[in-house]
Length: 584
Image (tube, rainbow, N blue to C red; front, side, top):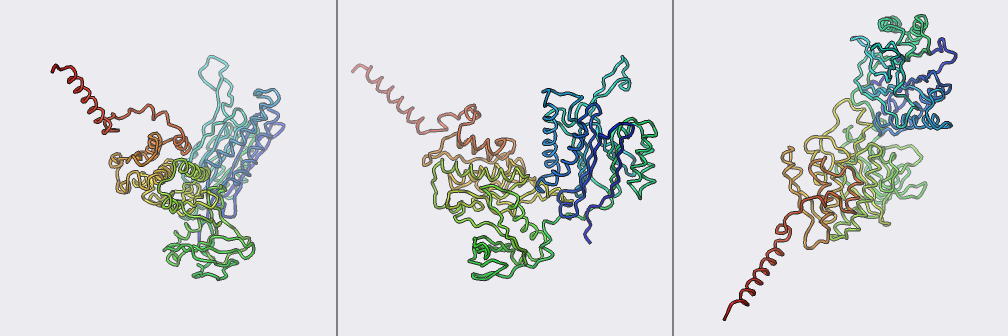
């Protein structure tokens, strides 16, 4: 039986000797696929005691975090998701703090500390700002995992900070932007995490915390309540809040699955024209290979034409390839961009394993390039800009396409380009669900893949830029900047020796600065390329400053014929001059 991440959570909060409780805490444990894709979230916030609005700040922080985190894309990493949510929360709190007086008022500010724990797969992700603390308890003892964001102002000449007062140096609502601490640690079965406010940890000794949790291991709520009582009895004059989270079970290796269809449904039969299939009428076959079969079909309900992609029988028993097959539609559902293929979802259950996409009437960019071997530079610029917008939609979702090539780009009848084929897409959020090392083997096509892939490295946005540069080069020349040599380089030293073949030629009207822009985009070394795709687009439109700063090669190298013609003309003029001055 497949194991999932399982935890026990105990919690307790009390106003203590204060008139009101300005702390807030919460947790959420999904009971569906979100458990694997997003994990378990636990959060605590402590509003500053000097403000009458701090309870609003703490409550807003925790509730909004738990709501919004699970609304972020499953494709994003935990870090990306949480940072986006916390930035939004902080901006709202800061705007409330600055309203009215127009400046920060510590007595009226919407200010709160915030600490969160996201447990996903075999990792714990910690996010922290302020002085609420997160601890871990295991066989090695009690370890404080967060650092307090406090400034000490001594009221005497003593060097001992305890002789003065402390102030929060960082918290939600104080400034915009707000800097958060983040760290990721490995989980072990039996680990216990403790999140508590200063009303607890400043009064209860570590030994008491360890003993209480150990003694009340069967009832963590009871342990939390006991620790709150101990802090109160020991003189705590603040609000008292604590959460205790124990890791009971860890998930199996690579436990996440995008769909249970692999286990519940069968592969479809071989489809033929005019066949009725799951509410569709098959019109004709579009493409077939050893991995999949692609058909043009009509939805019997809507009358709309769609593309149905079915796995080939060769991968029937290959769970990994079936998972990647289903991944394509999963990706298409989450990207909404005019330059990316869309999934087409009928509102009815499926009886077989297959995927459905919008039908694009047109041709591949590869076919267009064959039909237009000498396109204008402006047409190519327009195409590259469209492709870049599609790629950027992937990158905003923490995804990499990883197989960008003309064959995977469709040109429709309106002149719009759309990126297709998501079988090689890398999704950062799903990579976090893997317990083994992320795949470093080449998923894309060698001629368009960045050199770093051939060194066994993982790709990034710079790798996508390389592929886009190669596509640009191919459209303008019909060839490749390094021919097929990139795939044969297995060391960094070999890659440094790759020689770029210039686009400049007598039969092409291409400015030298455009050639320079493409040369930079396809540099074998990622850090020598443009910073991002949009810098590359700018360089295709206007000469980069670096181009003017480059030392131009001697004229004899750039145009040896013109040099020798000039020398010959000069010698001829010398001869004429000498002849004219000689007496006869």
